[in-house]
Length: 467
Ligand SMILES: Nc1ncnc2c1ncn2[C@@H]1O[C@H](COP(=O)(O)OP(=O)(O)OP(=O)(O)O)[C@@H](O)[C@H]1O
Ligand SMILES: [Mg+2]
Image 1 (cartoon, protein in one colour):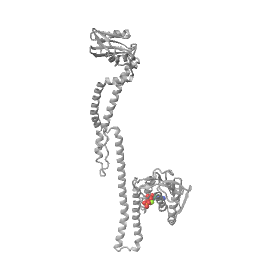
Image 2 (tube, helix red, strand yellow):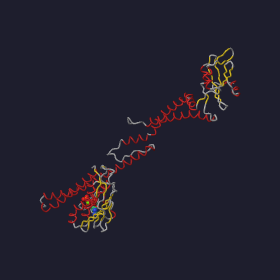
Image 3 (cartoon, helix red, strand yellow):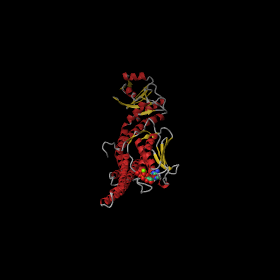
Protein backbone atom coordinates (compact mmCIF):
# COMPACT_ATOMS: atom_id res chain seq x y z
CA UNK A 1 0.00 0.00 0.00
CA UNK A 2 1.36 3.48 -0.83
CA UNK A 3 2.56 5.53 2.10
CA UNK A 4 0.52 8.63 2.84
CA UNK A 5 -2.60 7.40 1.02
CA UNK A 6 -5.68 6.74 3.18
CA UNK A 7 -6.31 3.01 3.50
CA UNK A 8 -9.70 1.78 2.30
CA UNK A 9 -9.89 -0.72 5.17
CA UNK A 10 -9.23 1.97 7.77
CA UNK A 11 -11.73 4.37 6.25
CA UNK A 12 -14.41 1.72 5.99
CA UNK A 13 -13.80 0.45 9.53
CA UNK A 14 -14.07 3.96 10.98
CA UNK A 15 -17.20 4.69 9.00
CA UNK A 16 -18.89 1.44 10.02
CA UNK A 17 -18.01 2.04 13.70
CA UNK A 18 -19.39 5.57 13.43
CA UNK A 19 -22.57 4.16 11.91
CA UNK A 20 -22.88 1.64 14.71
CA UNK A 21 -22.46 4.33 17.40
CA UNK A 22 -25.08 6.49 15.67
CA UNK A 23 -27.49 3.55 15.38
CA UNK A 24 -27.10 2.56 19.02
CA UNK A 25 -27.55 6.17 20.16
CA UNK A 26 -30.67 6.47 18.03
CA UNK A 27 -31.90 3.21 19.49
CA UNK A 28 -31.24 4.42 23.04
CA UNK A 29 -33.19 7.60 22.29
CA UNK A 30 -36.02 5.80 20.57
CA UNK A 31 -36.79 3.49 23.46
CA UNK A 32 -37.95 6.24 25.84
CA UNK A 33 -39.76 7.90 22.93
CA UNK A 34 -41.67 4.69 22.33
CA UNK A 35 -42.31 4.52 26.06
CA UNK A 36 -43.73 8.04 25.99
CA UNK A 37 -46.03 7.10 23.13
CA UNK A 38 -47.07 3.99 24.98
CA UNK A 39 -47.75 6.05 28.12
CA UNK A 40 -50.60 7.70 26.24
CA UNK A 41 -48.53 10.61 25.12
CA UNK A 42 -47.27 11.72 28.55
CA UNK A 43 -44.37 13.93 27.65
CA UNK A 44 -43.39 14.91 31.17
CA UNK A 45 -42.02 12.66 33.91
CA UNK A 46 -42.04 13.29 37.66
CA UNK A 47 -38.67 14.70 38.67
CA UNK A 48 -36.84 11.82 40.46
CA UNK A 49 -34.91 14.32 42.62
CA UNK A 50 -38.09 14.98 44.59
CA UNK A 51 -37.66 11.79 46.65
CA UNK A 52 -34.28 13.09 47.88
CA UNK A 53 -35.86 16.35 49.11
CA UNK A 54 -38.64 14.40 50.83
CA UNK A 55 -36.17 11.94 52.39
CA UNK A 56 -34.06 14.80 53.79
CA UNK A 57 -37.07 15.89 55.89
CA UNK A 58 -38.00 12.45 57.28
CA UNK A 59 -37.03 11.21 60.72
CA UNK A 60 -38.05 8.24 62.86
CA UNK A 61 -39.37 9.28 66.21
CA UNK A 62 -40.35 6.37 68.45
CA UNK A 63 -42.15 3.96 66.16
CA UNK A 64 -43.28 6.46 63.62
CA UNK A 65 -41.95 8.38 60.65
CA UNK A 66 -42.36 12.10 61.11
CA UNK A 67 -41.88 14.99 58.75
CA UNK A 68 -39.46 17.64 59.96
CA UNK A 69 -39.64 20.23 57.18
CA UNK A 70 -36.29 21.73 56.35
CA UNK A 71 -35.25 24.36 53.82
CA UNK A 72 -35.04 21.87 51.00
CA UNK A 73 -38.48 20.41 51.71
CA UNK A 74 -40.04 23.84 52.11
CA UNK A 75 -38.69 24.89 48.73
CA UNK A 76 -40.21 21.74 47.23
CA UNK A 77 -43.55 22.30 48.94
CA UNK A 78 -43.61 25.91 47.66
CA UNK A 79 -42.88 24.76 44.13
CA UNK A 80 -45.44 21.93 44.19
CA UNK A 81 -48.30 22.79 46.57
CA UNK A 82 -50.31 19.68 45.49
CA UNK A 83 -47.43 17.31 46.28
CA UNK A 84 -48.41 14.05 47.93
CA UNK A 85 -46.31 11.13 49.07
CA UNK A 86 -46.41 7.94 51.07
CA UNK A 87 -43.17 6.99 52.86
CA UNK A 88 -42.77 3.42 54.17
CA UNK A 89 -39.75 2.21 56.16
CA UNK A 90 -38.41 -1.29 56.69
CA UNK A 91 -40.49 -1.63 59.91
CA UNK A 92 -43.71 -1.11 57.97
CA UNK A 93 -44.24 2.33 59.50
CA UNK A 94 -45.86 4.81 57.08
CA UNK A 95 -46.25 8.53 56.67
CA UNK A 96 -48.83 10.04 54.28
CA UNK A 97 -48.54 13.63 53.06
CA UNK A 98 -50.99 15.60 50.95
CA UNK A 99 -53.98 14.11 49.19
CA UNK A 100 -52.86 10.63 48.20
CA UNK A 101 -54.95 9.16 45.33
CA UNK A 102 -56.78 6.10 46.64
CA UNK A 103 -55.27 3.66 44.09
CA UNK A 104 -51.78 4.93 44.93
CA UNK A 105 -52.42 4.37 48.64
CA UNK A 106 -53.04 0.71 47.83
CA UNK A 107 -49.89 0.51 45.74
CA UNK A 108 -47.88 2.14 48.51
CA UNK A 109 -48.85 -0.80 50.75
CA UNK A 110 -46.88 -3.04 48.42
CA UNK A 111 -43.94 -0.63 48.07
CA UNK A 112 -41.60 -3.13 49.68
CA UNK A 113 -41.87 -5.25 46.52
CA UNK A 114 -40.27 -2.60 44.29
CA UNK A 115 -37.04 -0.65 44.23
CA UNK A 116 -37.90 1.86 41.51
CA UNK A 117 -41.18 2.12 39.66
CA UNK A 118 -43.00 4.58 37.48
CA UNK A 119 -46.76 4.58 37.60
CA UNK A 120 -48.10 6.05 34.41
CA UNK A 121 -51.65 5.98 33.24
CA UNK A 122 -53.01 7.18 36.57
CA UNK A 123 -54.43 10.67 37.08
CA UNK A 124 -51.01 12.04 37.80
CA UNK A 125 -47.95 9.98 37.03
CA UNK A 126 -46.25 8.78 40.20
CA UNK A 127 -42.78 7.48 41.04
CA UNK A 128 -41.51 5.06 43.61
CA UNK A 129 -37.93 5.57 44.78
CA UNK A 130 -35.79 4.16 47.60
CA UNK A 131 -33.95 6.60 49.89
CA UNK A 132 -31.28 5.34 52.29
CA UNK A 133 -31.74 7.35 55.48
CA UNK A 134 -30.44 7.02 59.05
CA UNK A 135 -33.56 4.96 59.93
CA UNK A 136 -32.69 2.58 57.03
CA UNK A 137 -34.27 2.18 53.60
CA UNK A 138 -37.40 4.24 53.07
CA UNK A 139 -39.59 3.69 50.00
CA UNK A 140 -41.29 6.84 48.88
CA UNK A 141 -44.18 6.86 46.42
CA UNK A 142 -44.88 10.44 45.33
CA UNK A 143 -46.82 12.45 42.77
CA UNK A 144 -47.89 15.97 41.79
CA UNK A 145 -44.28 17.09 42.26
CA UNK A 146 -42.21 19.07 39.73
CA UNK A 147 -41.93 17.44 36.29
CA UNK A 148 -38.99 17.03 33.92
CA UNK A 149 -39.26 17.56 30.14
CA UNK A 150 -38.92 14.90 27.46
CA UNK A 151 -35.34 15.87 26.49
CA UNK A 152 -34.06 15.42 30.00
CA UNK A 153 -35.98 12.19 30.25
CA UNK A 154 -34.31 10.98 27.04
CA UNK A 155 -30.85 12.05 28.16
CA UNK A 156 -31.38 10.29 31.45
CA UNK A 157 -32.39 7.13 29.64
CA UNK A 158 -29.18 7.23 27.56
CA UNK A 159 -27.09 7.77 30.72
CA UNK A 160 -28.97 5.03 32.56
CA UNK A 161 -28.39 2.59 29.71
CA UNK A 162 -24.80 3.79 29.21
CA UNK A 163 -23.04 0.71 30.56
CA UNK A 164 -24.80 -1.94 28.42
CA UNK A 165 -24.65 0.36 25.40
CA UNK A 166 -20.90 0.80 25.85
CA UNK A 167 -20.43 -2.94 26.16
CA UNK A 168 -22.34 -3.58 22.91
CA UNK A 169 -20.38 -0.82 21.20
CA UNK A 170 -16.99 -2.14 22.26
CA UNK A 171 -17.97 -5.59 21.05
CA UNK A 172 -19.20 -4.32 17.69
CA UNK A 173 -16.19 -2.03 17.17
CA UNK A 174 -13.76 -4.86 17.95
CA UNK A 175 -15.48 -7.22 15.54
CA UNK A 176 -15.63 -4.52 12.85
CA UNK A 177 -11.95 -3.63 13.33
CA UNK A 178 -10.95 -7.27 13.00
CA UNK A 179 -13.32 -8.32 10.23
CA UNK A 180 -13.38 -5.43 7.75
CA UNK A 181 -9.63 -5.33 6.94
CA UNK A 182 -9.72 -9.11 6.36
CA UNK A 183 -12.86 -8.88 4.21
CA UNK A 184 -11.38 -6.07 2.13
CA UNK A 185 -8.07 -7.88 1.82
CA UNK A 186 -9.75 -10.98 0.40
CA UNK A 187 -12.09 -8.95 -1.85
CA UNK A 188 -9.15 -7.07 -3.36
CA UNK A 189 -7.03 -10.12 -4.06
CA UNK A 190 -7.91 -9.85 -7.77
CA UNK A 191 -6.80 -6.23 -7.78
CA UNK A 192 -3.44 -7.12 -6.23
CA UNK A 193 -2.94 -9.62 -9.06
CA UNK A 194 -3.71 -6.83 -11.56
CA UNK A 195 -1.15 -4.59 -9.82
CA UNK A 196 1.51 -7.28 -10.07
CA UNK A 197 0.75 -7.74 -13.78
CA UNK A 198 0.80 -3.97 -14.39
CA UNK A 199 4.33 -3.81 -12.98
CA UNK A 200 5.43 -6.19 -15.73
CA UNK A 201 4.16 -3.99 -18.58
CA UNK A 202 6.98 -2.69 -20.70
CA UNK A 203 7.60 -1.54 -24.27
CA UNK A 204 9.17 -4.95 -24.99
CA UNK A 205 6.22 -6.85 -23.52
CA UNK A 206 3.33 -5.48 -25.47
CA UNK A 207 -0.01 -7.23 -25.58
CA UNK A 208 -0.08 -7.58 -21.78
CA UNK A 209 -3.51 -6.96 -20.26
CA UNK A 210 -4.53 -6.69 -16.62
CA UNK A 211 -6.53 -9.68 -15.34
CA UNK A 212 -10.14 -8.88 -14.45
CA UNK A 213 -11.02 -12.13 -12.69
CA UNK A 214 -11.97 -11.59 -9.00
CA UNK A 215 -11.66 -7.82 -9.37
CA UNK A 216 -14.60 -6.16 -7.54
CA UNK A 217 -17.14 -4.52 -9.84
CA UNK A 218 -16.31 -1.03 -8.51
CA UNK A 219 -12.68 -1.38 -9.63
CA UNK A 220 -13.34 -3.51 -12.72
CA UNK A 221 -14.36 -0.41 -14.68
CA UNK A 222 -10.94 1.14 -14.01
CA UNK A 223 -9.14 -2.09 -14.95
CA UNK A 224 -11.18 -2.30 -18.18
CA UNK A 225 -10.38 1.31 -19.02
CA UNK A 226 -6.66 0.67 -18.43
CA UNK A 227 -6.85 -2.40 -20.68
CA UNK A 228 -8.51 -0.37 -23.42
CA UNK A 229 -5.83 2.32 -23.04
CA UNK A 230 -3.13 -0.37 -23.28
CA UNK A 231 -4.73 -1.65 -26.48
CA UNK A 232 -4.74 1.86 -27.97
CA UNK A 233 -1.09 2.29 -27.04
CA UNK A 234 -0.23 -1.10 -28.59
CA UNK A 235 -2.11 -0.20 -31.79
CA UNK A 236 -0.38 3.18 -31.94
CA UNK A 237 2.99 1.55 -31.39
CA UNK A 238 2.33 -0.91 -34.20
CA UNK A 239 1.29 1.91 -36.52
CA UNK A 240 4.53 3.70 -35.74
CA UNK A 241 6.50 0.53 -36.45
CA UNK A 242 4.69 0.04 -39.76
CA UNK A 243 5.28 3.67 -40.63
CA UNK A 244 8.99 3.39 -39.89
CA UNK A 245 9.27 0.22 -41.97
CA UNK A 246 7.40 1.84 -44.89
CA UNK A 247 9.55 4.97 -44.62
CA UNK A 248 12.74 2.91 -44.67
CA UNK A 249 11.44 0.99 -47.66
CA UNK A 250 10.54 4.18 -49.53
CA UNK A 251 13.99 5.64 -48.85
CA UNK A 252 15.79 2.48 -49.88
CA UNK A 253 14.52 2.47 -53.48
CA UNK A 254 15.71 5.94 -54.59
CA UNK A 255 18.93 5.51 -52.63
CA UNK A 256 19.62 2.17 -54.38
CA UNK A 257 18.93 3.74 -57.80
CA UNK A 258 21.17 6.65 -56.91
CA UNK A 259 23.93 4.33 -55.77
CA UNK A 260 23.65 2.30 -58.97
CA UNK A 261 23.92 5.38 -61.16
CA UNK A 262 26.87 6.78 -59.26
CA UNK A 263 28.62 3.40 -59.64
CA UNK A 264 28.01 3.47 -63.39
CA UNK A 265 29.37 7.01 -63.50
CA UNK A 266 32.51 6.17 -61.57
CA UNK A 267 33.13 3.07 -63.73
CA UNK A 268 33.10 5.35 -66.74
CA UNK A 269 30.14 3.59 -68.43
CA UNK A 270 28.04 6.73 -68.19
CA UNK A 271 28.85 10.40 -68.69
CA UNK A 272 27.94 12.92 -66.04
CA UNK A 273 26.51 15.64 -68.33
CA UNK A 274 24.10 13.09 -69.79
CA UNK A 275 22.85 11.77 -66.45
CA UNK A 276 23.11 14.74 -64.15
CA UNK A 277 19.40 15.55 -64.72
CA UNK A 278 18.33 12.08 -63.57
CA UNK A 279 20.69 12.18 -60.60
CA UNK A 280 19.23 15.48 -59.54
CA UNK A 281 15.70 14.05 -59.77
CA UNK A 282 16.69 11.07 -57.61
CA UNK A 283 18.29 13.33 -55.02
CA UNK A 284 15.23 15.54 -55.07
CA UNK A 285 12.99 12.54 -54.41
CA UNK A 286 15.02 11.56 -51.34
CA UNK A 287 15.10 15.18 -50.17
CA UNK A 288 11.30 15.49 -50.62
CA UNK A 289 10.70 12.36 -48.63
CA UNK A 290 12.96 13.57 -45.81
CA UNK A 291 11.09 16.88 -45.82
CA UNK A 292 7.68 15.14 -45.65
CA UNK A 293 8.84 12.94 -42.76
CA UNK A 294 10.05 16.03 -40.92
CA UNK A 295 6.70 17.72 -41.54
CA UNK A 296 4.86 14.80 -39.97
CA UNK A 297 7.25 14.82 -37.03
CA UNK A 298 6.72 18.54 -36.50
CA UNK A 299 2.95 18.25 -36.45
CA UNK A 300 3.25 15.45 -33.95
CA UNK A 301 5.30 17.13 -31.34
CA UNK A 302 5.04 20.90 -31.75
CA UNK A 303 2.94 23.07 -29.49
CA UNK A 304 1.04 25.28 -31.86
CA UNK A 305 -0.65 28.55 -31.16
CA UNK A 306 -4.22 28.56 -32.38
CA UNK A 307 -6.11 31.70 -33.30
CA UNK A 308 -8.70 33.05 -35.69
CA UNK A 309 -7.71 32.29 -39.28
CA UNK A 310 -9.28 33.73 -42.42
CA UNK A 311 -9.61 30.90 -44.94
CA UNK A 312 -10.06 33.40 -47.81
CA UNK A 313 -6.68 35.01 -46.99
CA UNK A 314 -4.99 31.60 -46.75
CA UNK A 315 -6.48 30.50 -50.11
CA UNK A 316 -5.46 33.78 -51.79
CA UNK A 317 -1.86 33.31 -50.65
CA UNK A 318 -1.59 29.63 -51.63
CA UNK A 319 -3.25 30.08 -55.05
CA UNK A 320 -1.10 33.18 -55.67
CA UNK A 321 2.13 31.32 -54.78
CA UNK A 322 1.36 28.16 -56.75
CA UNK A 323 -0.43 29.70 -59.77
CA UNK A 324 2.78 30.00 -61.88
CA UNK A 325 3.55 26.33 -61.20
CA UNK A 326 0.00 25.31 -62.11
CA UNK A 327 -0.02 27.40 -65.29
CA UNK A 328 3.39 26.00 -66.23
CA UNK A 329 1.96 22.47 -65.84
CA UNK A 330 -0.96 23.23 -68.18
CA UNK A 331 -3.75 24.21 -65.75
CA UNK A 332 -5.98 27.25 -65.35
CA UNK A 333 -6.01 28.03 -61.59
CA UNK A 334 -9.11 29.77 -60.27
CA UNK A 335 -10.19 31.07 -56.85
CA UNK A 336 -13.80 31.75 -55.79
CA UNK A 337 -15.31 32.50 -52.36
CA UNK A 338 -18.74 32.87 -50.84
CA UNK A 339 -17.96 35.72 -48.45
CA UNK A 340 -15.12 38.27 -48.23
CA UNK A 341 -13.84 36.49 -45.11
CA UNK A 342 -14.31 33.01 -43.65
CA UNK A 343 -13.02 32.81 -40.10
CA UNK A 344 -12.13 29.52 -38.39
CA UNK A 345 -10.18 28.76 -35.22
CA UNK A 346 -6.86 27.15 -36.02
CA UNK A 347 -3.18 27.30 -36.88
CA UNK A 348 -2.80 29.40 -40.03
CA UNK A 349 0.54 27.95 -41.13
CA UNK A 350 -0.73 24.36 -40.71
CA UNK A 351 -3.91 25.16 -42.69
CA UNK A 352 -1.70 26.73 -45.36
CA UNK A 353 0.45 23.59 -45.49
CA UNK A 354 -2.67 21.44 -45.87
CA UNK A 355 -3.98 23.53 -48.76
CA UNK A 356 -0.55 23.57 -50.45
CA UNK A 357 -0.52 19.77 -50.35
CA UNK A 358 -3.98 19.48 -51.87
CA UNK A 359 -3.21 22.07 -54.54
CA UNK A 360 0.13 20.38 -55.37
CA UNK A 361 -1.72 17.07 -55.68
CA UNK A 362 -4.11 18.65 -58.18
CA UNK A 363 -1.08 19.83 -60.15
CA UNK A 364 0.75 16.49 -59.88
CA UNK A 365 -2.19 14.14 -60.39
CA UNK A 366 -4.79 16.28 -62.22
CA UNK A 367 -3.94 15.24 -65.77
CA UNK A 368 -2.15 18.51 -66.75
CA UNK A 369 -5.27 20.06 -68.23
CA UNK A 370 -8.34 22.07 -67.31
CA UNK A 371 -9.17 24.18 -64.30
CA UNK A 372 -7.96 23.80 -60.75
CA UNK A 373 -10.69 25.51 -58.77
CA UNK A 374 -10.18 26.59 -55.14
CA UNK A 375 -13.53 27.52 -53.60
CA UNK A 376 -13.84 28.97 -50.05
CA UNK A 377 -17.07 28.55 -48.05
CA UNK A 378 -17.94 29.69 -44.51
CA UNK A 379 -15.99 26.89 -42.77
CA UNK A 380 -14.47 24.93 -45.65
CA UNK A 381 -12.06 25.02 -48.57
CA UNK A 382 -12.77 22.86 -51.64
CA UNK A 383 -10.20 22.05 -54.34
CA UNK A 384 -11.47 20.55 -57.64
CA UNK A 385 -9.63 19.48 -60.74
CA UNK A 386 -10.38 17.88 -64.11
CA UNK A 387 -8.15 14.83 -63.78
CA UNK A 388 -9.17 11.19 -63.56
CA UNK A 389 -10.35 11.56 -59.94
CA UNK A 390 -10.06 9.04 -57.10
CA UNK A 391 -11.80 5.68 -57.64
CA UNK A 392 -14.33 4.81 -54.94
CA UNK A 393 -12.27 1.96 -53.49
CA UNK A 394 -9.28 4.25 -52.84
CA UNK A 395 -11.15 7.12 -51.20
CA UNK A 396 -10.32 5.93 -47.67
CA UNK A 397 -6.89 4.48 -48.31
CA UNK A 398 -5.31 7.52 -49.99
CA UNK A 399 -5.14 9.12 -46.53
CA UNK A 400 -2.94 6.30 -45.21
CA UNK A 401 0.81 7.00 -45.29
CA UNK A 402 2.59 5.85 -48.47
CA UNK A 403 -0.63 4.93 -50.26
CA UNK A 404 -0.58 5.96 -53.94
CA UNK A 405 -2.90 5.07 -56.79
CA UNK A 406 0.07 4.43 -59.02
CA UNK A 407 3.07 3.26 -56.95
CA UNK A 408 5.52 4.37 -59.64
CA UNK A 409 4.50 8.02 -59.12
CA UNK A 410 7.20 10.35 -57.88
CA UNK A 411 5.53 11.42 -54.64
CA UNK A 412 6.09 9.49 -51.41
CA UNK A 413 2.38 9.20 -50.61
CA UNK A 414 2.67 11.17 -47.38
CA UNK A 415 0.97 14.45 -48.35
CA UNK A 416 -2.65 13.42 -47.69
CA UNK A 417 -1.85 11.69 -44.38
CA UNK A 418 -0.22 14.93 -43.25
CA UNK A 419 -3.32 16.89 -44.32
CA UNK A 420 -5.56 14.49 -42.41
CA UNK A 421 -3.43 14.92 -39.27
CA UNK A 422 -3.71 18.69 -39.59
CA UNK A 423 -7.50 18.46 -39.94
CA UNK A 424 -7.83 16.09 -36.96
CA UNK A 425 -5.89 18.57 -34.85
CA UNK A 426 -8.42 21.20 -35.86
CA UNK A 427 -11.36 18.97 -34.91
CA UNK A 428 -12.15 19.13 -38.60
CA UNK A 429 -12.19 16.59 -41.41
CA UNK A 430 -10.97 15.96 -44.93
CA UNK A 431 -13.10 14.20 -47.50
CA UNK A 432 -12.74 13.41 -51.18
CA UNK A 433 -15.44 13.17 -53.81
CA UNK A 434 -15.99 13.87 -57.48
CA UNK A 435 -15.68 17.40 -58.81
CA UNK A 436 -18.23 19.01 -61.13
CA UNK A 437 -15.63 18.65 -63.91
CA UNK A 438 -15.38 14.90 -63.35
CA UNK A 439 -12.03 15.00 -61.53
CA UNK A 440 -11.26 14.87 -57.79
CA UNK A 441 -12.75 17.28 -55.29
CA UNK A 442 -11.03 17.52 -51.87
CA UNK A 443 -12.89 19.31 -49.07
CA UNK A 444 -11.21 20.62 -45.90
CA UNK A 445 -13.98 21.26 -43.34
CA UNK A 446 -13.46 23.10 -40.04
CA UNK A 447 -15.70 23.39 -36.98
CA UNK A 448 -17.41 26.77 -36.50
CA UNK A 449 -15.07 29.36 -34.95
CA UNK A 450 -15.81 30.80 -31.49
CA UNK A 451 -14.77 34.27 -32.58
CA UNK A 452 -13.25 36.40 -29.83
CA UNK A 453 -13.14 33.63 -27.23
CA UNK A 454 -10.77 30.86 -28.28
CA UNK A 455 -11.64 27.85 -26.09
CA UNK A 456 -8.28 26.11 -26.32
CA UNK A 457 -5.54 28.48 -27.46
CA UNK A 458 -2.66 26.02 -27.12
CA UNK A 459 -3.16 22.57 -28.62
CA UNK A 460 -0.35 20.28 -27.52
CA UNK A 461 0.91 17.83 -30.13
CA UNK A 462 -0.38 14.52 -28.90
CA UNK A 463 -1.46 12.73 -32.03
CA UNK A 464 0.70 10.24 -33.80
CA UNK A 465 1.73 9.90 -37.35
CA UNK A 466 -0.69 7.52 -38.92
CA UNK A 467 -4.28 6.98 -37.98
N1 LIG B 1 -6.15 15.40 -57.24
C1 LIG B 1 -5.84 14.10 -57.37
N2 LIG B 1 -6.23 13.43 -58.48
C2 LIG B 1 -5.94 12.11 -58.63
N3 LIG B 1 -5.26 11.39 -57.71
C3 LIG B 1 -4.84 12.00 -56.61
C4 LIG B 1 -5.11 13.38 -56.37
N4 LIG B 1 -4.59 13.70 -55.17
C5 LIG B 1 -4.02 12.58 -54.69
N5 LIG B 1 -4.15 11.57 -55.56
C6 LIG B 1 -3.69 10.19 -55.37
O1 LIG B 1 -3.52 9.95 -53.99
C7 LIG B 1 -2.20 9.52 -53.71
C8 LIG B 1 -1.76 10.00 -52.34
O2 LIG B 1 -1.58 11.39 -52.34
P1 LIG B 1 -0.52 12.00 -51.36
O3 LIG B 1 -0.58 13.46 -51.49
O4 LIG B 1 -0.69 11.40 -50.06
O5 LIG B 1 0.84 11.45 -51.93
P2 LIG B 1 1.66 11.91 -53.18
O6 LIG B 1 1.08 13.14 -53.74
O7 LIG B 1 1.75 10.72 -54.09
O8 LIG B 1 3.08 12.16 -52.54
P3 LIG B 1 3.55 13.36 -51.63
O9 LIG B 1 2.36 14.22 -51.42
O10 LIG B 1 3.98 12.66 -50.40
O11 LIG B 1 4.63 14.04 -52.35
C9 LIG B 1 -1.39 10.06 -54.84
O12 LIG B 1 -0.24 9.29 -55.06
C10 LIG B 1 -2.34 9.96 -56.02
O13 LIG B 1 -2.30 8.69 -56.54
MG1 LIG C 1 0.77 14.81 -52.53
